Amino acid sequence: MPETRAILAVLLLFCAATPVMAETAGGIPAPRAAELEHMVIQDCGSCHGLTMKGGLGSPLTQEALDGADPDALASIILDGVPGTAMPPWRPLLSETEALWIAEYLLQGDLNQ
Image (cartoon, rainbow, N blue to C red; front, top):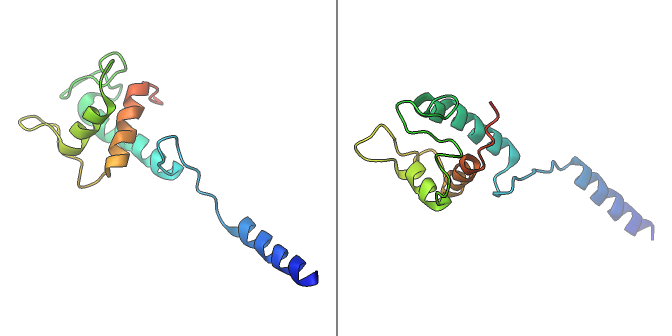
């Protein structure tokens, strides 16, 4: 019995010392989600307007994106739009991250 208690004590200490990485609904770790949110506001906002109401790029408001397919938006994010100022972000983002951004935009709850 003392050996079992010792093993349990070690396991409890290990679990308490191991950080828990919270994930968002899209499976993105919370710290990365915060980075992506910052990227949307700063980098996307530099062309689409800091309030996402448009500028050099088209509006990315909830109204403007109403009915848009998240996968199609993720594809645009990843591959850009040839002949426009929309660059491809594939070198910097995974497909999961691009889909997270697309769904974030469709929610329309930009923290601004």
